[in-house]
Amino acid sequence: MITVIRNAWIVTQNTGRDILKGDVVMENDNIISVGGKYNNAADKEIDAEGDIVMPGLINTHTHVAMAPLKGVCDDLPFDKFLDATSKIDRNRDTCDLEIGTKLGCMEMMRGGTTTFVDLYYSEDIIARAVQEAGLRGVLCWCCLDEALTTQRGNPINNCKKFCRTYKNKRKIIPGVGLQGVYVCGEETCLSAKEFSEENDLPLSLHLSETRTEVNNHKQTTGLRPVEWLNNIGALSPNMIAAHSAWLTMNEVKIMGKIGMSVSLCAVSNMKLATGGIAPVPELVSNGVNVTIGTDSNSTNNSLDMFSEMKVAGLFHKFARWDATVMPAQQLLDFGTINGAKSIGMSDKLGSIEIGKYADIIIIDGHAPNMRPLIPGNIVANLVYSASSLNVKTVFCQGNLLVEEGKIITLDSEKIMNKSEDIWNKLSTS
Image (cartoon, rainbow, N blue to C red; front, side):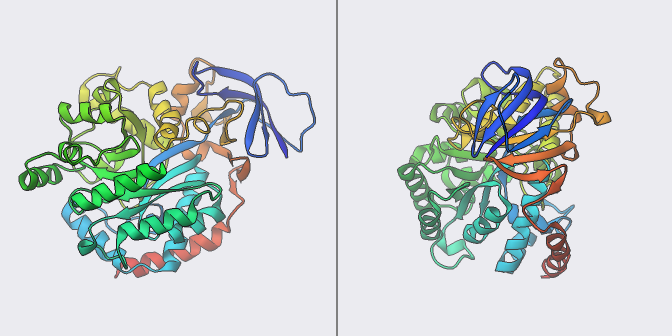
C-alpha cells in the first residue's frame, strides 16, 4: 500500500537537519520518497498543506501499565511513594495490566509517540496489549534479586523466557530491565548484562535517581552506583539509564567511555522532589547518548513527550543560569534520533529518510499556538509551543494509528470507562 502525505513542512531530522516542503511517501512499512512532488498513483492521500510532518517521538523510559494510577500516589515523600506503589504492584491482575497498557498506549499515540521503552514485570501481558494498539514497544522485563521480588519464579529466568518468546515479533522489541542497584546484587546485574549482550537486547535500569540511593550504596559497597557497576563489569553500551540525576564527573566519563544512554525524566524528578539534575552538557561532551523519558503516570502524571522536551530544556536552563544550554534542536534530537540510537535502531527510526520505517506524525500547523510558522521557527515551535493535542495523524511502521485526532486501533471509550474501576480498586488496595 502506498500512502502520500502532500504539501507539508517536513522536519526530516536527517544528518543535515533539513526542513523541506513537499510530499512524504510510504509504501507498506517504509518511507520511499521525501520532499518534492510525488506524481505517481497512491492508495491513500493526505493533504497536509500548512502542517508539519516529523518523525514519531521515542519515549525512552516509562511504565506503561501504570496509566490508571494518575493521582493515586500524588504529593507523597519519595519513600512513602515507593511503599504505596509497591503495595499496588502486589495486587495487580491481568485485566488491569492489560487495560492500563492500552490506556497508556492511547495517550502516547495520541501525543505522537510511536516507540516507547518500558520497564515492568509481566511484559508478556503488556506485549499483547501493545500489539493491539499498534505502537512499537521496547519491553524490558524488570529483574531484581529473587529474595526481594513479588514475581513468581526467578526474575532473570522470567525475563529470558519473555525475550525468547517475543524475539522477532513485529513492532515488539524484548529487552532486559534492572530495577536498580538497591534491589539488584552483583549476580543479578551481571546476569542481566550478559544476557542483554549475548542477544543484543536493550537494557533499561533506574540509576542514581536519588541522593539516598547513591549514599546508601556507597555506604554498603564503598562505591557510587556507576563506579560499582563498572567495577563488577556490569555496564554496557546497551544500557539506557533512567534519571541519572546524581552523578560525579568520574561517573559521567565512565558512562561515556562505555557508550551508554541516559533517559532524562525531568518532570518525574521534579514532582517527586528527588533533587539533583542530570549533568546534560557534561554527558553530551563525554559521549553519553542523551534521550528523553516521561516515567510513569504515577510520577509524571502525563506521557506527553512534547511537554517533556520543553520541561527538560527549561529545567536545565534554569539550573545552569544559562539560556543557551539545551537549545530546541538538541531537545528534538533527544526525543527522536538519540532515542533511536539508544535502542540500536538508528538505521530504522528517528528521522524521515528513504528506507527507514514509516514512523511519521502530522502536527496541526494551523493551530494558533503553532503560528507564525516559517522554516526558521518550526523546530522552536515544536519544542516550546506544541502539545500532544496538536497531533493530528500518527503512523507507526506504515500502520495508521491516529487519524485527525481519533485513535482507530482501539475502542477508546471502552478502555477509558474501565480505567475508573481499576483506579478505585487499586487506590484502596
